[in-house]
Length: 152
Image (cartoon, rainbow, N blue to C red; front, side, top):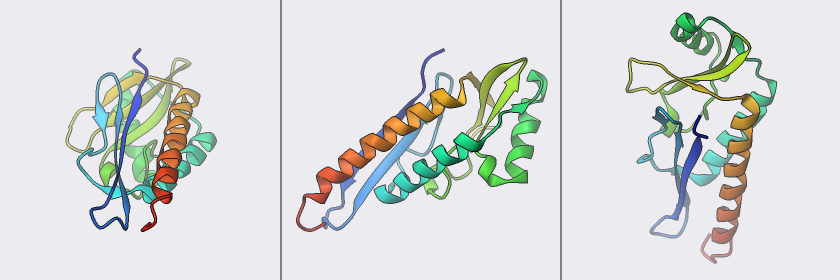
């Protein structure tokens, strides 16, 4: 399995008043998050921190491989906080993901908003959280760089 990555960009607004970001989660088989969508960097930071908290409390849903799509849609419909993607930032609106256990193996089931198909990646929640925590650290470091600009 190819380790997923978070593609992250941070930039200063032209009036030097705001710090914006772009974000996309890149898995082996699919990417989620609209990388073209600008969002406030601090909003993304809060969404990523919230995601780590939710993932630390999340128990993968046990299911069969032929029931992944139903489990995904039911889990999200039941409670949006079951989503394994950032919430409250437009770049991820409509994308869906949830962790499942199939025969004691951990998978993330992903459905981009533009797709009618689900994608499955073998991945543990701890691996996923490590990836997100590294991105949180990177985003905080970039925000510190911009904080030294007098107009911010």
